[in-house]
Length: 267
Image: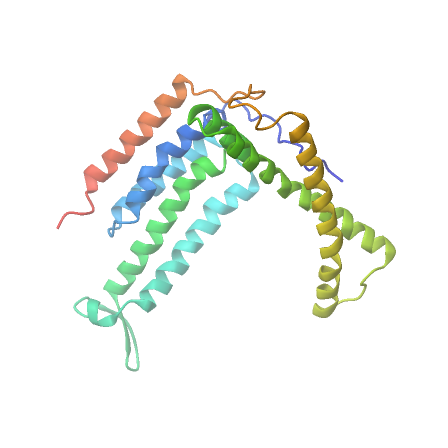
């Protein structure tokens, strides 16, 4: 079994997004993500999609999974959402636009397709901007940056970090339990009922393991006087450097330029 807490190897120098402060990456895209909820045109989300793709492709450690998300998942999601929203659009609101398809008494208008495409592109742009931070930031680093730069009380931050650490631990324990059940031949067989029986058999040992792990974590935190003092020394520093300020300013400036150029709220 692999170590549930083993981290990834350090990102290479060219994957510059991985070396930025998590708060800089989050603050650089959050205003644009919020404003994109209120746009209705096509040009603005397309511009932000291009910006997000350029940043991700130039500064991320690319893997097969990331390529699949960028080249398959996001375009596929735009297509599905565009068609779905076009079918849900009220025909009476777009009846003045040209007809694309007519089946019996049902008619698909160009305006419905445009509205669906605008919705799909808007959601895709928000997702692509979120990937700038999501693909290059770990949960522990985000918590540490919040404690160190935003002055979030460490009692809340490191409690959240401890909870985050439970996730890989549960995955590791579930793998151990599944292996033990296979060795003992417990809940064998095929089909949906056998899968349900196997899943039910994992619940009790997984809960027992979770309780034991929670007790060990609580004892470890108590032994280190967690919460006894208003501040604590930091073992892992997540500094906010000049390059973080430069990235934050450039991204905010680019976002402002896109909204100013297309101004999607003009009457």
